Length: 179
Image (cartoon, rainbow, N blue to C red; front, side, top):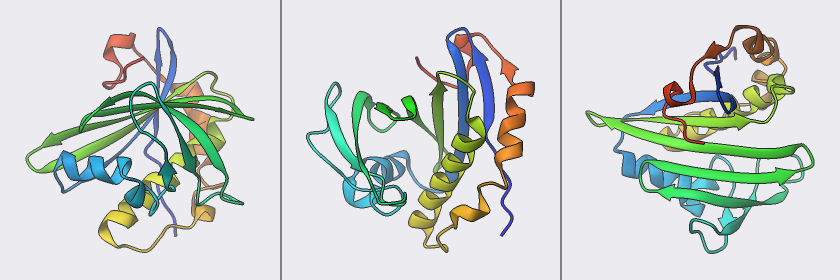
């Protein structure tokens, strides 16, 4: 199946933000539950365990990755049902991301903002987030589970090209991203 990438790259005073979004016909509280409750995150990303609170670290299983590894994620900000900021460090570097929800007329837009330390590897990272967000869509609406091979390497050229044509905006004008 051919999928079209929607990710955009914004340069801010603090660096680069890769932004991807999906819209759901559901209240923000319900979408929030899909991205914060372990039994629901298990359906599209992986379960987590621990005492979830700002400033605390939880263990998250990346259930759809090879060997389903566990990693530690720090909850930097938790403002239900609008903003969740997480960070982690692995063998590929530091990852800082936010999930931002906004509800209008019964529909909720979820924006994933990945604050990039470098734009190197964006051709691998972008397709991965497209895949996981489509996994979330499938988990919520019961549609067929996407296949990662439909995302990578097919979307790599699109994401690699974002560096050449990124929108440059002051930090305050980035799409509701907080640093």
